[in-house]
Length: 99
Length: 183
Ligand code: SF4
Ligand code: SF4
Image (tube, rainbow over all chains, first blue to last red):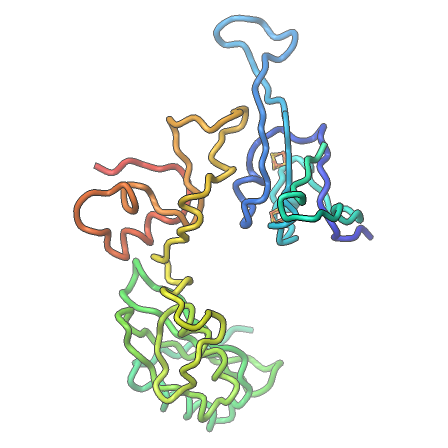
C-alpha cells in the first residue's frame, strides 16, 4: 500500500488541463503551460495544438493532504507517494517543483 | 434506512427536542446549521437523535431568521449539544438563549460568520488564484475571467458602485466559475 506522505506528478500523463489547480481547496498547486502545434499535423489557421507542461509546483506549507487533486485528475497524472516532502527552514522553501 | 424528518417552528424548538428525547430518542448524534439563503432568509438548524447509535434516527429541523434571532438552547436536555450550539453560533451567527455564550472555534471578538454563504473570503480576493489560467496559458489572460469558489463576482463585491450588494446577491455570486457580466 502506498503511503500518503506526498503527491507525485506523472509528467507524461499531465495534459495541463488545470482541473487539479482549480479544485485544490488550499490553492497550493500552480502550473504553467503553453500550447504548441502537434508535430506533423497539417499547418494553417486550424492547425491542431497540444499543451506542453512547463512547470508544476505544490506548496507543501499549504497542502491539506486531502487528495482531491489525486481524485480529480482525469489522466491519472497525480498519485500518492511514500516520500515525505523535503524539510525547509521557511514556509516558502516548501514549494516543490514536481517534474 | 432513512431518518424521519420533523420540521418544527423556531419557538417550539426546545419543547420538540425535549419531547423527542423523552420519547426514547436519547442518543444524540449531531446538531448543525445550513444557510438557506436563496430559498429562505434563514439558517436551518438540525439535530439528529436516535434510540441507539445503530437505530434509525429522527432529524428535527427548524428555520431561524438570519437577522440575529436566537433559538432556545437544548443543552439542558441534550448535554452534548452544547458544543455543537457554540459551533453553530460561531459559524452561522445563530444565538442559543440559555446556552454557553463562549466562542468555540473562532477567536474572541472575531467578526462575521464564515459558513454563511455571503461570507466573503477576503484573503482570496486579494491573492491571485492559480486556477485563473486556461490550459496552455503561461499567464492568465484577462478576457475570460474565472473566479474561484468563495470569491464573489467583482461586479457584486469590490468594483461595484452604488448600494452594497444584498446577502442574496453576494451568496449567489461566490460559487466560482466564469464571471458573467450582469447588465
Ligand atoms: S492534496 Fe488537497 S490541498 Fe494538497 S495539493 Fe491536492 S487538492 Fe491541494
Ligand atoms: S488534473 Fe491532472 S492532467 Fe490536469 S493539470 Fe492536474 S495533474 Fe495535469
